[in-house]
Image 1: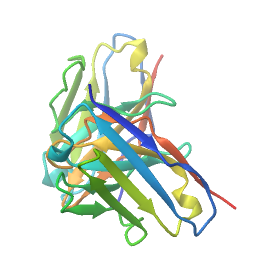
Image 2 (image 1 turned 90 degrees about the horizontal axis):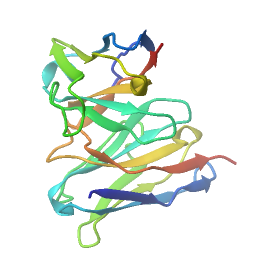
Image 3 (image 1 turned 60 degrees about the vertical axis):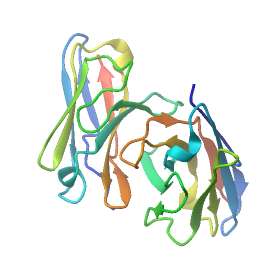
Length: 109
Length: 119
């Protein structure tokens, strides 16, 4: 049950695109199409942004997209906006447990 | 509207016990798995435990296995986390989260309850 690996921080200017990677193993990310992504603002509960690798819940802007290749999943945010400045966590289901990434701080410059 | 309301957090001494509750509303509670996820101060999210809709299957992170017990009362729309033999590293905000049919993602979250383990 080792944590998934995410970059500690990424940044981008308004209007630009950024991609956050999430690396696991064949036992979690690579073994299931059950990667999800969460946005968390300081002092708030996490919010689901992407599930099942690339699906968006109702209400999440289509600027947010997800993908996966092998043991690495990615979250791409296009057309960055000030309100995207937040922490982002990836998550993967595995056999009988769930594992999160360490989190990435996105700074909108 | 889905609502999840945690309670039961507080200050407890190392080695002590605490029971967290999460009251759910706005959905057919018994049809969905539920989970607990925690976040230590200034740290990332950590999945703690999950339970199936019927309560017949339970799952635990290695870090809490043998010390924490998850359960649910579908007549009361409530999920519980019994925490025993608490350690300093269990200090965290504990979130209750709703799963879809399985634990493959968390679609709704409560606001969390703070557990502090300290003498």
